[in-house]
Image 1 (cartoon, one colour):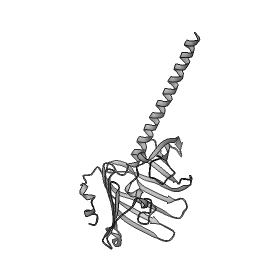
Image 2 (image 1 turned 180 degrees about the vertical axis):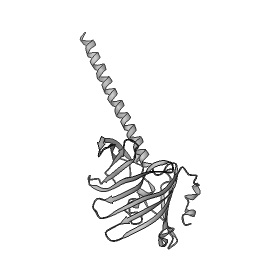
Image 3 (image 1 turned 90 degrees about the horizontal axis):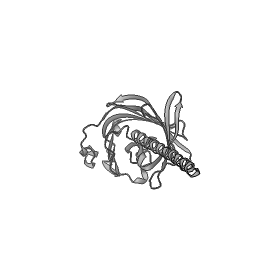
Length: 254
């Protein structure tokens, strides 16, 4: 009964193959869900929060107070509230369109796509970082590169590589996430040659607005060891009732 033995071996091989494919699919789905959760962690369906931004360069230091509103993934408004000389300066995103309002000259300027990776207000965060024009799960393929213990904490590590059609500049992004609560610990951004460009670290995890979030975000460029920008969340409300009229050019200069 060689044919029966051969059929049995083939059947077992197919079962192992299907099991491994199913496990891989489940892992891919879990990775997708966790990265999407990280990407929307500080937004929710809507949000309204106040933050401090502390910018340090080799030449100067600058502190900004900001109020940030968001509604879904299509609407973001950021307004500087302090220092007084810059109060009222604002950035507005509506779908794929982004504008800056400059109160000193009472002028609204549309930001072209080519400038999305430029510094936001002299910080080490980009325009894209602040308004979240790109979406990680939309623009990147995700693979699990590590699962285990680091420094006494169980973590996942994911490598994100850009999809062929995605209009992004990063060659890859590597993200570490705590397994227990899916809180991000760090994100590392690489250029197309695989060189590290910058690192974003998360800390000071607190419950705000009914959810656990990292309240301190530190962005440091890889080639400027003495420079950094820190964002500190003072308070945030999630799923707040925010009118869509908040996100309008008419409201931008108010």
